[in-house]
Image (cartoon, rainbow, N blue to C red):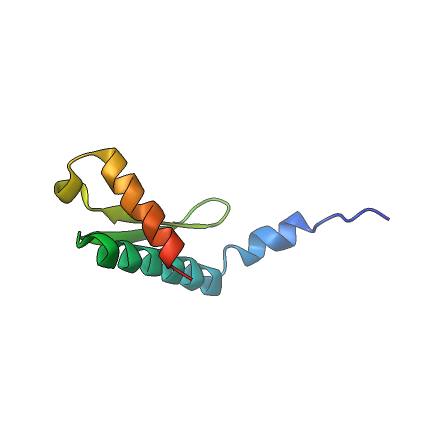
Length: 82
């Protein structure tokens, strides 16, 4: 027997307000962890896209003044967020 996921059901779950709150919570934890690791200022942004909720942790451009420094801070923040 082959497993076939119910993609319509999965897509509908990924668009619920509960899923949106969870995505926002995780992005906030990543931003908070990156802030505490670097002392920079991060913020989050989230939106309901055509298929699912999306969120991002954004910031710390002024402190590092380069994209690679910001990327490193966000990756450290993701490691620190549970």
